[in-house]
Amino acid sequence: MPIVEKSLYKPHPFLKNPHAQTIFPAIFRQVKDVHYKRETLRTPDKDILELDWSRVGATKLAIISHGLEGSSQQPYAKGMVKTLNQEGWDALAWNFRGCGGRPSKFINSYHSGKTDDLDFILQHTKSDKFYYEQIVLIGFSVGGNITLKYLGEKGQNLDTRLTHSVSFSVPLHLESTSDQLAKRENRLYMEWFLWSLRRKIKGKESEMRLFGLDTNNLHKISTFYEFDNRFTAPLNGFKDAIDYWKKSSSLHYLSGIKIPSLVVNALDDPFLTDRCFPFEESKEHPFLFLETPDRGGHVGFFSSQSSFWAEERAMKFILWGE
Image 1 (cartoon, helix red, strand yellow):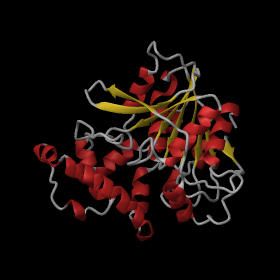
Image 2 (cartoon, rainbow, N blue to C red):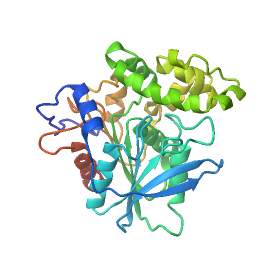
Image 3 (spheres, rainbow, N blue to C red):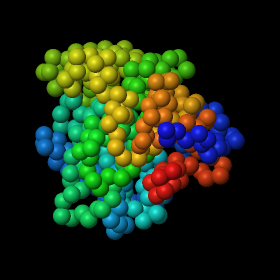
Image 4 (cartoon, rainbow, N blue to C red):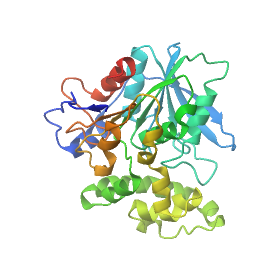
């Protein structure tokens, strides 16, 4: 049922190419006047999570989840935080383990389907120092996958303060997006992600070897399949990369979502495949709203009417449900 038939997003006339939409904001966008206050949270397994707060004294909170190898410092995260604050919302941009400036204490760190940290953060907001009556979740790319998977897993058992979610550029089907990023035209993105991931493995080389993992010839790893099969899967209890992707893809959890949730995936997103556009699932789903602009790239959505349309779109859905 809730498919947004006509997206109002219009790309900037000079940035219609999907790669330009993807790369330009990531490199050149600057967001001023966002001042985080960091909280270091100790997890139940004695690791740490770095939480970056921007509070205006509201009783409404948005929790923002960044993309693969990103952080709370990404322009898209800070842009969303700034808009939320201007609209009278507190914002929390949390960093996945090992992404907040300090390495994770454990070798398994985070992965694209790890939802327990998000749940732990929500439990943390119930403490006496907070007074939140309403909470929304906003995710970008892998952060969107984690958000949707979390909502689907929780189903009816969701925190009653959660009212909406919005996710942009979501790789709902991890196996096919991994194959997509392995294509020649996407090598730039693949190399960037793998450079960051290899660096983290290199930093824990001795621990990896104690765990029985081979860290030789890291530079020869050229695809997510190789990396996830060799490291992500065994470190996180999966049989192999295929098992990891299957169990972590939010596509398989959409039916369990019980709050209004908007997914915005551009049809020209260079990361995504047909499996990441759940038209059939949305037609019959009372809570899943799917919007598919013709343009926008991956976490781009730069426009001429409003520099960054994603923030306006998220607020419209959160405030008006449309």
